[in-house]
View 1 (tube, helix red, strand yellow):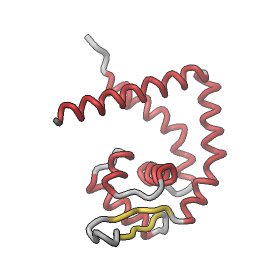
View 2 (cartoon, helix red, strand yellow; view 1 turned 30 degrees about the vertical axis):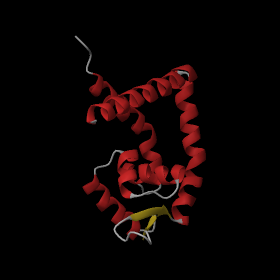
View 3 (tube, helix red, strand yellow; view 1 turned 60 degrees about the horizontal axis):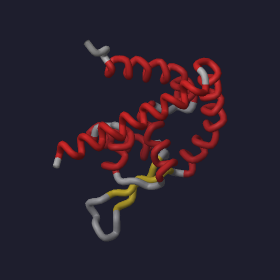
View 4 (cartoon, one colour; view 1 turned 120 degrees about the horizontal axis):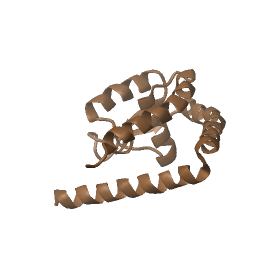
Length: 145
């Protein structure tokens, strides 16, 4: 009988977030807001459907989160000129400043994690999780065809 991998991954996520959540809270950010800010920072402006996929946030939830983020000045939304139904979401200077302010704190937390569990464990985990995501995404794409 297999171990409960989804439960193990959730438990690992919660243990990881316990390390990072205080950093987000200190900046007045929720986990969802941070995932969106990080995705936009790393990828540039995105459409909401792309943000949903990258951040694993449902479309109805994303609509509310983006509206609040726009209200407090974290993101801007602009319509495409050639298709007014489509929207592009971008970070504001305020959010870029938050990212820059958080970088050293995040790096320190990652260094502390590597010190606690070992650089090899962290590196192996990146490789394993990337492979799992790649294979599951590929498999789901094939299944949909």
